[in-house]
Amino acid sequence: MQFGHTMIQQVMKFLGSLRLTIYLILALGAVFLLGLWIPQANVLKMDAYLQWKGQHPQLVSTLEVLRLTQIYTSPFTTTLWAFFFLNLSLVMWKRVPAILQKIQFTEAKLQDPRESSGYVWNKEIELHEPVSEKRLRFLITKCGYKFHGTPARFYAVKNVLSPIATLLFHLSFFLMLLGGIINMYSRFSGYVDISEGESFNGELERYNSPPRLPKIGTPPDVAVTVEKVTPETVSGVPTRLAVRLVDRQGRRHLAEINRPYRAGPTAFVVTTIGVTPLFVVTDGQGRELDGAYVKLNVLGGKKDNFTMLGYRINALFYPDYFNDGDTEGTRSDAFKRPAFHLQVRKEGRTLAEKTLLMGDSLTVEGHTLAFREMPFWVRLYVVKEYGLEAVYAGFMLAIIALVWRFFYYRREMAVAAVGLYTATVMYLAGRSEFYRNLYQDEFEKTVSILQQIKG
Image (cartoon, rainbow, N blue to C red; front, side):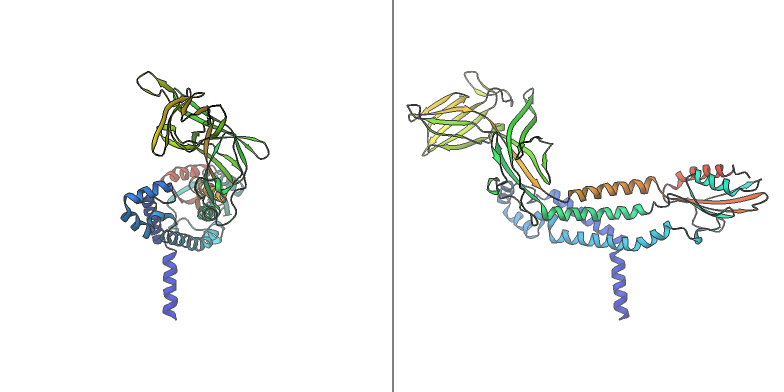
């Protein structure tokens, strides 16, 4: 029984030790480095991840078995975090009583500076007048210290509550943990493409691929309409993308690349822009046979395609079209003179090919394909999450605790006086938690102030 009790004590001592803290921090650091080096399944887009797996099937399969492609949520990483917070809890459990005792005044702190070994700086001053307790307390308080005791022997402390900042710093990690857990289980995310004039009411089937559903809670209940998309360019280079959204109450909101629109816990982040040209097919008598606004991902020289009236139409887009007779292309990325180079195919054969400016058309098998309008579409990253407030509060608490701990650090003095009512010899000793050499100047300044004591 005694052996088992001893073993438990040793295990608990190790779990709450600084050595384990260092091991865990190093291990978690290695995990995050691996996560930066190894592509992560929840970071890469699915097509990019599948492409990587197709190029290196054996390697990726091995990494998947070891859970290294999902290293941040793997059982190994989760276990490391569990031990980290267990270690942190045990450290706090041990420190709380010591800190509470440290910030309380006890008679044991009325030490004789000539005998105390815990103080770094020592000084002896001689006063030729009696010591006035009122004057002594006034000068100690003026130096920023709190006075305890009597003129014969007293203890003075500055920033007595500073050790509490250590507990607040540890507590900040638990706040961040709480926020992270809430965020992990409540997070919804997905991408949706919406054209100008088109509405989105949160339908799951409208997302480009199945969105990530929350384990707790529901998908976002939102309704927005993209009213206007305004791409801006300077010297032919895109500089800004402004998207005006209208909510279900009819209120207008502005969203940009780095400025999402937030509706409660849901955020709409603008990620991509594309074009939604209107193509119309008519017969020889001008009757409309087919027509549609087609969302095309053709910016940056990409090619896309769509089908209409049984034709497969390949599209290449020129934002600022030019044709000098020998070549055609785009002068810039600015949407100054939009044009589409269309290739109409059917059953593997090319039936017609032509570049159309807005208002132009081409003829194929007695039909006319016309390019009428060109609004834009935007890809919005829709995120609904809770818990970030706790994470931000944890970061703020950590910053406050660090500033408090290292800028308003604790200083202490032990003082004993001999010959209170005649010539007085005062013995002083001082120490600080941090910046010992810097404190020496402060200690000397305090000593010179105390030498001003007069009856």
